[in-house]
Amino acid sequence: MSDGTDAPRIDPALWRGLTQRRISRRDMLKYTGMGAGALALASCGVRGSAKPAATNSAVNFSKIYDSGKPAGILNFANWEDYIDVDSKGNSPSLEKFTKATGIKVNYKTVINDNEPFLAKIIPVLQAGQDTGYDLIVITNGGPVERMIRLGYLTPLDHKYLPTWDANADPKTKNPNYDPGNKYTVVWQSGFTGIGYNSKVITTPPTSFKDLLNPAYKGKVGMFSNNQDMPCPALTYMGFDIDRSTPDQWKQAAALVTKARDDGIIRSFYDQSYINALENGDTVITQAWSGDIYIASQPKSVGGDGYPEMKFVFPQEGPIYWHDNMCIPLHAQHPVDAITYMNFVYQPDIAAMMADFIWYVTPVPAAQQVVLDQIDDPAVANSPLIFPTTEDLAQAKQYKVFKSPQEEDDWNSVWQPVYSS
Image 1 (cartoon, rainbow, N blue to C red):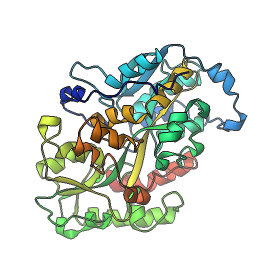
Image 2: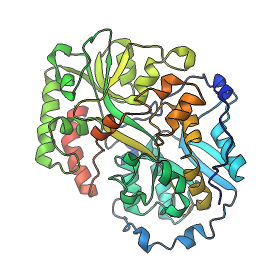
Image 3: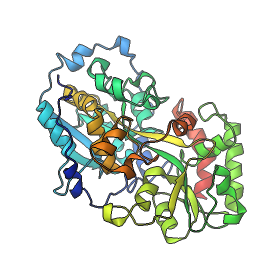
Image 4: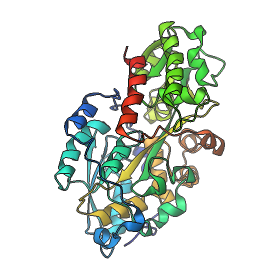
């Protein structure tokens, strides 16, 4: 099977047409704790049907990948506006993949939130059937872990991932939610940190503590979900997220609750937080790195045109989350899927996507390609797309729940804070 390493070089002129509005990967992501999607999953009865996850040493990969010859078809389910697209609506990187491998890609933007998408495919998987997708992109912090716990992802044979092994950022390898990358490799990533209006706040914030500052009373935003608000609060208090105890959760929750009750926090937001920051309802907020980058860029290149919007990594460390490529169980074309996984870890391909998507690429070597071949120093020099070694060293991961009961206990502490 080809890894596409002979793909032609990027044509810099191609990027002149890539100026349509970038819609954030998170524009449609509505975290609501145990919201409609999660309740739908619960109604499917998936909590009690978990299968033990197989260790890679116990997997007969020949039954999955056979001789390693692609079938020539890849059914790919992804999020809206989460791949490079030219002015004609085509993806140059997908075209390069097909040219290099002969694999035709049926690319579908059918995911607009993790939970509703999983609520559709899990009953199909329970019935032992093919979902219709060979490759899906799912976020950690609950969704990926659930699929692993239920045994609904296909194990990856790493002999087909040499380009990933050579080029993936070490910070994305062996993640706490998928030790050894048995089932996943990262698609793109982002940081949860602090966004602020630099016209109003002239001294940059440095810590989660700044979100609790009475000086910003009524002008602070926080997230209304069960990972992006709790995890930074725990980190600020010096607690290890994964090893934290229910008593520590309550201590951190009490800290945020007091700021809420004192009127410091204006509201707990979903994606609408970026609108609140842009229109002045808030001046400082918890934020996702890609959103702030998009907000700050000129409209002429697809941004929102608010250069005063800035993002900072809190000194106690940002939260580093990942959207992951994975192959659902019973997929009809697993060789084609793993071929694509490996292909996108080429620096030139990763650069094409990073220059359009504006989230964190898992391929650090793509930075030089963006600078030299695409000639986009704004993207290449942004720590929100190519984070520094220091920022990555401080980064923390989402909480990984040991069981559905632990997740329920966690939610019972945090949901009242942001839903009251």
